[in-house]
Amino acid sequence: MKDLGFFLALARPHAIWLRLGAALAAVTLLAGIGLIAVSGWFIAAAAAGGLASALAATRGVRAFALLRPVSRYAERLVTHDATFRILARLRVWTFERLIPLSPGGIARMRSGDLVARVTGDVDALDGLYLRFLTPVAAAAAGAAGVAVLLALAAPLALPAILFLFLASAAGLPVLTARASRKAGERASDMAALVRAEAGDLAAGLAELKAYGADTRVRHRLDEASRAWTSAQRDLARLTMINSAVLALGAPLALVTALGLATAGGAGAGLAVLCGFAAFALFEGAAPLVQAAEGYGRMQRSAARLRAIAEQTGDVVTPAAPVAPSGRHDVRVEALSFAYPGSETPALEHVSLGLPEGSRLALTGASGSGKSSLIKILMRFYPVPAGTVWLGGQDVTTLDPREVRRRFALVDQRAELISASVRENLRLGAPGAEDGALWKALELARADDVVRALPDGLDTWLGEFGSALSGGQARRIALARAFVTGAPMLLLDEPTEGLDAPLEHDFLTSLGDWADADERRSFLLVTHRARVIDAAREAIVLDNGHIAQKGPVASLTGPSTAFSRLFPEYRPAG
Ligand SMILES: Nc1ncnc2c1ncn2[C@@H]1O[C@H](COP(=O)(O)OP(=O)(O)OP(=O)(O)O)[C@@H](O)[C@H]1O
Image (tube, rainbow, N blue to C red; front, top):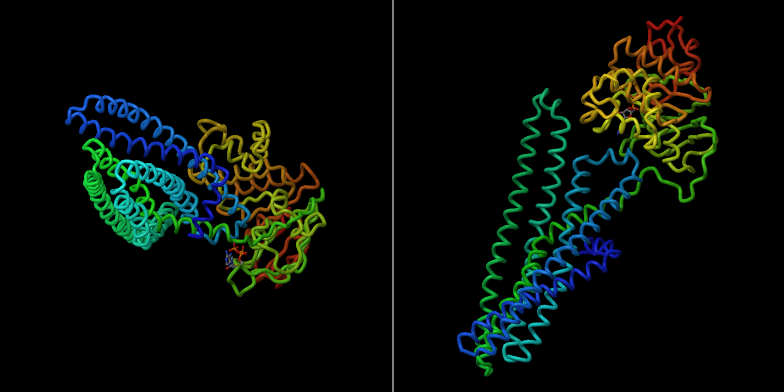
C-alpha cells in the first residue's frame, strides 16, 4: 500500500481534475439510481391508475435519463484526460529516474524488463487513478443519496440496505484485494517476464537461430506465458465469483427494501421506488470490486517502478558542478577500476595524457582493459581510485553530461538507431542544419552512400541501421561523431570487420578531421597494426596495466610488449 500511496501523491498536481471526475461520477451514479427508482415508481403508479403520480414520474424519468449520459460523458472525458496526463507525467518521471543512472548501471538491467516498466507497469497504474479514486467517491455519494431517500420514505429498510451495500462495496473489495494479491502479483511478474523474454528473443533471433538456441528461448517464453495465463485465469475466476455475488446482492436489496418499505406502511409506488433505488445502488459497488481485483497487479507495478526511483546511479552528478574550462586536454592519473561485482580489476594504476591535438592509439590483447578506459572517460562508470582530469578539472566535479559532450564515441558496432539518416546524424546535435550534415558526410566519405539511398537524408535506416552494410554504417557513425562538434573522438575498434580499402578511407577521413583543427584529438582503440599508423603515439595495455607507451616508432624492438602483439609491424612510409 506504501508504494500505491507514493504514486497517489505523484498525481497531486491533477487532483482538481480527479475530484471533478469523482463529482461527475457521483452525479452519474445518483442519476442512474434516480432513473431506475423513478421508472419503478412510474410502473407501479401506472399499474395502480394514479395518473398524477405517473405524470410526475415521467418527468423524473426524462430528467434523469438526460442527466445520466451527459454526466457520464463528462466524467469519462475528465477522468480519462486526467489519467492520461498523470500517466504521461509518470512516464517522464520514470525516464527522469533512469537518465541519471549511468549507461554502465542501465546495462545491468534487462532491456525487456526496462521496457516492461516504462510501458506495462505505468499503464497498470491507470487503474489506481481511474478505477479506484473516482468510484470510491461516487459510491459514497450514491450510498448517502439512497440513505436519505430511505430515511425519509422507508426508515425500516435503511439498516438492512446499508448493511448489504457496505458488505458489497467495502467487505467484498477487501476480501477480493486479499484473495487477488498473489495471483495479481504473479500476473504482473509474468507479464514483465514475457516482455523481457520476447525482447531477448526478438533482439537476438538471428544468432539464436544460427546456434539452434531459439527453441530453448521459445520454451522459456512459453513457460512464462503459461504462468501468466494461469495467473490471469485465477483472477478471472475471482471476477466471476464477484460478479455472481454482486448479481445476487442487487435483487436481494430490491426485495429487502421493497418488503421492509411495505411493512413500514409505504404505498406501492413509494415501496417500489425504494426497492429499485436500493437495487441501483449496487452499480456503485461494481467498480470498487473491479479495482480490488487489480490490487495485486497495481501493487507490484508500483513497487517495480519505485525500485527505479530508489536506484542510485554509479556515476554521481555533483550537487554544484563546476563550470567546464574551455580546454579539453585529458590526463589520467593512477586510475584503478573493477566492474561492479567483480574482484579482478579491469584497470590498475593507469596514468596517461591526451593533450589537445593528440592522436593516440590504445592497443593490447583482448581483455586488457582498452574499452574499459573509454567507458571511464565517457563517465559510464565512476572513477573509484585515481583521478581523471579534463581541461585541468577533476571529472568528478563536472556534470557527467558536460564531460560526455566533449567526446564523440564511435565503436565497432556503429549503433545506428531505427530512424532516418538525418535523425541518426543529429543524435548528438539536434539542431544541426542539412548543410552541416552533408559536410560531415563528405568528410566521412559517406555522402555517396546517402545520395544512393532512395530518400537521401530521409531514408529510414531500419532496426539498428539494418538497411546498411557494415562499412556504410561505420562511415555514417563517423559522420555522426563529426556532426556533434566534439573536439575529441573516442574510437573503439572502429574499423573491425572492414576490408583494407574501406579501412584506409575511414582512417583518411579521421586524419582529415583532425588536420582541420590542431586542437582536435582522438583516442583509437585497435587490435590492428595498420590502424596504429593513424596515430602518433601508442599505449600498450597488458592485463589492466600500461606495459609500454610512447611514439609508435619507439615501441618496436625485440621482445617488447608491442612487438609481441604485432611481430610483423613495419612503420608506414
Ligand atoms: N560489463 C562488464 N562487467 C564485468 N566485467 C567486464 C565487463 N566488461 C569487461 N569486463 C572485464 O574487464 C576486463 C577488461 O575488459 P575490456 O572490455 O576493457 O577489454 P578490451 O581490452 O577492450 O578487450 P577487447 O579487445 O576484447 O574488446 C576483462 O577482464 C573483461 O572480462
